[in-house]
Image 1: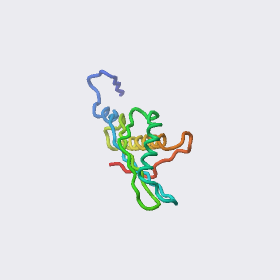
Image 2: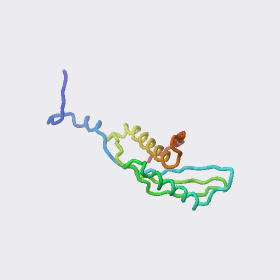
Image 3: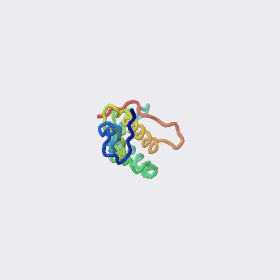
Image 4: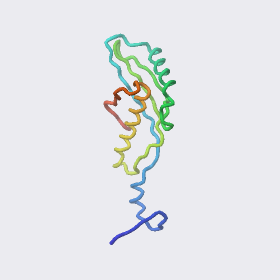
Length: 136
């Protein structure tokens, strides 16, 4: 036996097809970049100013689907500090079935890595990648 289905058919295996149809959505991503140095930590004002300068110069290189919502600097110790970014990523495709969402996590992680490399790395330089990701 064979079954053939096409768009517009009134009798279709709807539950099955719904599982295959991705949902488009958005995500807010918080990223923490920790820098360990052998010299004193730069001032918060200097770090934020450097980020703002890079954002102003490179923001046009980002996709329309990505927005930088916020960024902060945090002194951890005399020789380490963190830069925290909050990004909004829209137009993310996700399976309706939670069992098939690993691809979505990978997609978000790749977008996040691309955004941070575009903003903070030299063009053509070896790209950096996150060492760990937690999704909630």
